[in-house]
Length: 177
Image (cartoon, rainbow, N blue to C red):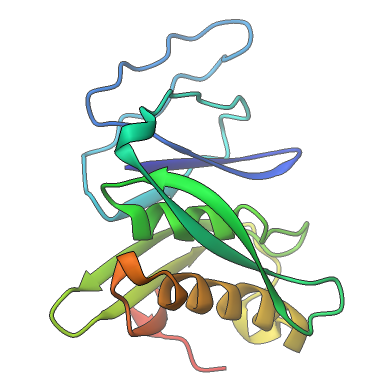
């Protein structure tokens, strides 16, 4: 499962095993990590906890993937190698891309990645924060390229994921831009 939270530095995504213990409230972590029913493909962005949750991952249980981010002129997507957990690697790759996509007026509250392994289609269901002042339709061409282009290329270009097509929805409804 991926848990992610907003902090003053942007979106932070960390991987948690279903068996990892909850962090106790401390001076550096005043809010315990929320208890979430395990769902292999679901991700939650918790804005109440600005402290990073650190979990050590055994390198043997990871795979190196390329995630793509838009360059400063929004002309091309630049790859960056990252290690993600072997299980649920598509979901983790999406989380890594979304770490970079956040602004003061456009906030994501979460996402879900559904994979159809027989057709090779991945559907990313994005959830806007209720506090977000902007919606998907109000994104500039550059912001759309950075968000949707990065996600699409990240999933399709990584052959271990076996994804041929990426679709985007918002709370189950197809996103048309």
